Image (cartoon, rainbow over all chains, first blue to last red):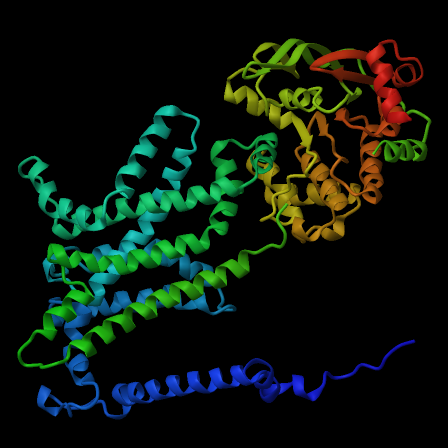
Length: 361
Length: 266
């Protein structure tokens, strides 16, 4: 005997059904729903007012701000400084090109069916850094040189994070492989490196890089402060990355190594073709977690006198020409960070879904 | 389990496969010993395997039979004695190990397919990267072998989408794609559901009929009777008895063999 296909009862369907089931199923659930809704709405309205309705968007000087809502005028007036730091106005097109290329490389990664998006991504990790290395500091091909102490704002934040992320993953992977190596010397070196760098706070690393390192270097040898900070951040981050990757390596069953060996694959092919693709896929959440925390940790370069976006904002909110704009400044910084971190997070989820090939053997 | 084996035995065809074995030993194991720490796993093993010969190794669990065949492609290291495969001795020399592994295919109990690659990619990987076969040619060969194991239609699927029996057949095809001179089977049907054992055994019987040199660790006595040129019985790390299947099953000489056969056949 067959039953005709029936729709579920009406009370289970639609918004009303959902609300009845989840929000108003019992009298205390209904009460809780009402109380919480009141709290959310009563705090959201003033926030919305402050952010948009009563906020000032146009004008020239601090006196144009009404004083009730947010003074976004402050952000728009100083935006140039927040993005480029002290980078000369006439040369900012170089940075704009880099922003454009960055977007070109990574925006397609979010669009599932973008033709050839792999190649854009590949450009992002190969061509882009090379072009940046030539274009941003200048001094090549007749480009006017801009010393790194003029760099700042969002652009500096992105440079620090980008170089850190790009270099830390391969170095970390090599360290993780080294730590699992059967050769005692290589293993020893990797263990010491990881344990030393991971046990030191980033602030200490940055201090060492900017204050102590020059004392140890032979006379005449000097790195720019930014370069030293970059090296410090990269090595510090590699140690973290190594442990994340090692977690993935440990999750790969021994049978995978054996099957690869039995087919005659040597160490590097076995790792490169069989083990790492699986291990890295497994630890994507951990890797992106590390990337995101690095991205935010770059704000610490403030203490060695580099003006990243937070530093740039912080130095302007104390400007006597602008009163009481600290909240606007920090909201703006938080928003900038959120955009990039959220983007990374979404991308990683996308990647995880794509690389999931069903059950593991 | 005993019952199952029994049942299987009854299903298998009884007439033995024609042997194509030659006299020249392809694999020589001479006075081989292995220890895990202080534990003496393999004791003074001696065995010559001729080209085209089919050997079945059986014995109780823990007798060292898996360890033994894993020594033949150096997944395990032996500490004393010699193993020579196709005139190449297995030593610490990585190049010699790789040379041997290229000629020796292996099928594992748990398939060990690469889950991040499709069936076809699983089969092509080693020919392309180790043998440097052009991709197109490797894919054609892979399809040929997938057809032989009767699953060409699954070529573009991932291993996780296949049943155990299908996965094991892919594993056999993957090993064959390297055109090995000898195939090692390490309990290929032990991890399979009963209804899938036959499809894998059928492929193995076909392979035996084609003249492939095979060493199989298995509990499938029906397979041993049909296919094996010699059956080896191992216990406690020693080779206890080596005999052609009819002798081995009908008239075992050693008391330990008799006891083992009694346990698995009744």
